Length: 142
Image 1 (cartoon, rainbow, N blue to C red):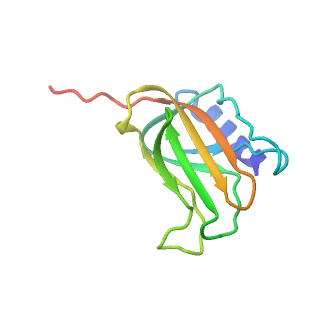
Image 2: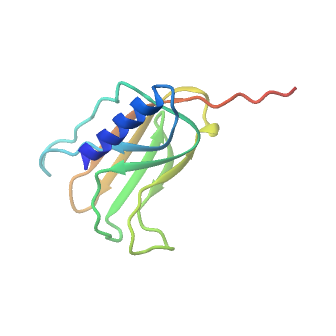
């Protein structure tokens, strides 16, 4: 799965160039090597994603098994919580999704740190960190 994601990201970068903006962004989680190992703190990806407008954020990898009251995912921007989910929606109780639709216009243009915490009540937790560049057009009052 990781190889596929990397190939898609590589294709996107080569085909559209470095100035292309992401409309979907997957944050890769870092898991401890063993369930008893201390949590790892990954370093942010060096090449920040450029975001503008509405962007769908998601995490990978995560379990595909739906389990009520087991998982919790929290999204933070610059250490401020912006979204939290158990992954189960009332509309689709048999499906698991940790996606979050981020409206980048709610944040200042510039570099930000995106952090995702994945909590598992029955197993190891994980973390993902990604630097992002928000670049929305400035509104003018002409």
